[in-house]
Amino acid sequence: MAASDAHNVYDTIELISAVGVKKSKQRIDHTIIIAFLAGVLLSFGGLFLLIVGGGSAPLAQSLGPSIHKMIQAAVFPIGLILIVITGADLFTGNTMILTVSTLHRKTTCFDLIISWIISFFGNLGGCLFFQCILVYYAGLLSNDPYRSFTVKYAEVKGNIEWHQIFLRGIGGNWLVCLAVWLGTSARELHSKVIGIYLPIWLFIAVGYEHSIANMFTVQMGMMLGADLSVGKYILRTLIPVTLGNIVGGGFFVGFTYWYLYLAKKVDTDAKIDFESPVGKGYQIVKQHEKIQQAQQS
Image (cartoon, rainbow, N blue to C red; front, top):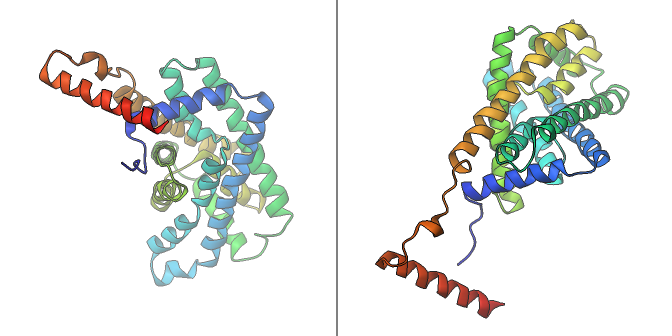
């Protein structure tokens, strides 16, 4: 029988827990580097969004704002695809991964806190490097319509009500972590790409928020002259979105699926009564499987 093209939910949650263990045991310099790389890779997607969004702005007038948003959202997922496939370390994904492995008692709360801190500031460093060196000094967004679109993009996000942007952060990382879940579940590269792509397209198109994505897009607008101070950005955008991302990824995905599929995992083999007709049939099947495995080896 051919293997399924995806792991089931029980295997997937175990794989996610194992990833958390691996992350907690990495060398500190490796952890910093892959967190930095995740910031850079996500910024590639953010740059693509700003270029396409600025260049296709007339579509908002002719076809409506929803089409314009969908086009921007369609190009952004490349960032997370690159992160997942190359094994980079994204803070928002870690809110789910380390929550699962810690609740599974494979890692500690200390491991979780260290992972979150390093990945958050490593992602920030990667975004700053990318936007300063590879965008600002490279002049990629210096001219209109890209500059004006990026500035307006940052100013709009900087003026969203605190509670609203917090709730959007919950929805944003809920979908990002489901994308990571699907990427982990899938076996083949094309399946991983599709599984990651669709939830990210959705989260950008509907207007949810992502703290690391904002580290590039909003901060890029600030560098280009947006009317948004550093203090206001931190207090009104970065903090509420980050807290919302932790709730969305850590609770609604990490805790929820740990509770459903890992908290009280049933050992089905131990609960079968081998004296019953069903149990005897099960035992025969298991013996047949062992014979087949022995013949193949």
